[in-house]
Length: 337
Image 1 (cartoon, rainbow, N blue to C red):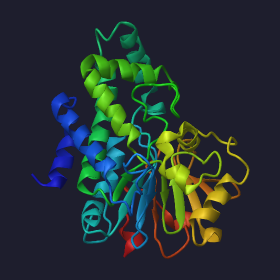
Image 2: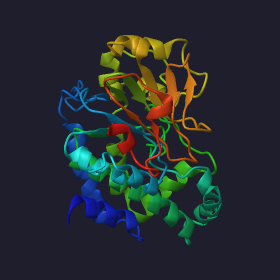
Image 3: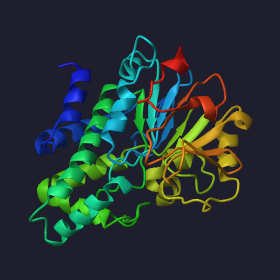
């Protein structure tokens, strides 16, 4: 089976993923994440790949915002035309493009509110019935299976940053907060996975989450899940797993919570041309394709109701008019040919 066919098969599967196969994939992905090319992910003090990603500076980058179980959106990105002759998946394989996902794979947002209401009733009855929660977990687990497959297949060209929703244990501490929005999503997911997939699965998935990077440096941009709470040194970023303050500050920062000039200070330190660079993030929803903050230096790109990505090339500054791309509406070829 080709990799292309494998992804399509996973995305079209109607049943929940098999526990044993998924657990094997988690362990394989953890190994990849722990031992990446140190020129891309410098090694931290523990000897594992750290939390900073140095993206390749000679190829374009597709930035994918918060996915929240949107399998179709992710597949639209992978199978969109990258050039008139190739799709994005082929471009990843040929080292012609790299993908950076900004985190938040689990938990459907407003589109799933009614389902969360039903699932909460299932949760309060100890999941004696669990159809709504099955549907929710089918989306989230399928999406993350696709993410992990891509990471294992294209480790140098595919990266998924940790967001605040990467907290399957629903833990409080270590840079994480327990999560609830439309319901008790964090606790409901933890209990579901524990009950139907087991504690070993739950623990292993949590290790996968903790091995994800937090911050990326491109040729002319920076990115993390959320706006940086403050300026962070390179050592802090590489060794972020040892510092909950850094994890929190790159995954949970709300609008107007960041220190003054935190974005500009990061641009000044990490980009060779900071005056023309920008810092991308997701986390907080925006009503259109993008929203500028922090003196137009921070660009939020998470629209939960739209499928918008950014294609940023290393040889020129970000242009919000031309570089915001809906992959399901013609793909990227008009921007790359």
